[in-house]
Image 1: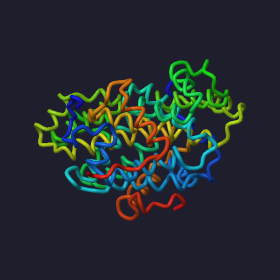
Image 2: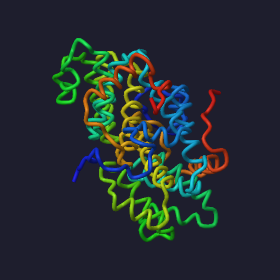
Image 3: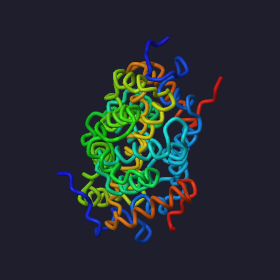
Length: 186
Length: 192
């Protein structure tokens, strides 16, 4: 049993976004649909890279729930190279990831701070390392989308297990295998 | 530091012809447009608790705080359509919603939206209590937070890809009328 006090009345002991999905299933259907297309649908970015981006933006927004769950999903998907995720979260420019992904994470970081600060130079650098229109589009929209999810989850003070809680590894495996399926009322 | 993208520059990716703002993005990625339009329709096209006009005002304020000219212009025009008798209302809310001629409940909800724009953790129990004192329900507080969060996404999507923003106010007035009267969001075709 976790102790917490959400800002509105939500199903008890259901964490983060899942409690909100049960509170308002009609908006959740679209939010989960967006996450599924964006993070699991066709993209030049791997699913592991997209989960890493989600965790990166959530970390910068200091959203413990989204950061911990998407980092866990990324670790699950990176398999033998799970350690890459934590290295990239804390110092992506020196992490063992491609130059293209580094340039895209720079763009994601700018979107998180203030999207107007994305510059033609940032985009040109990503293109120099092989990013195409879809890489750039998906990066910007993943970063923007997590600026939504992070604010939604924290703005209503939903249940957030503490960082490092074993619940996150379970969530990460579920996200890594099943993708984004809205929870059903029990 | 906070430069606006000049309207005559190219977007950062190759978008279909001269479609402005989010419309070019929706034409670029129709499979993404479906859940985005569905979300906007569910959140903005209902009068449950908060009216359609008030929901548009929340989206307009958040877009203004994020400095997104395209979104604040479109949604400001939709809001203006619903508040026909208050031609200065949008400007008043953007300038200082605390002194704008709107109900106290809406002021308290706009304060929550303003905090969400800064970051989810900026919303405190005090802000929630202030809204409840003026009669706000769980659903109204929920929808306010999600509308504000959703505009933090839409604004970043539009500006992060350097999309084209028209400078002609007649364009936005017509968009606002069309969304309110005819298409809504779910029925919106980016090419028309």
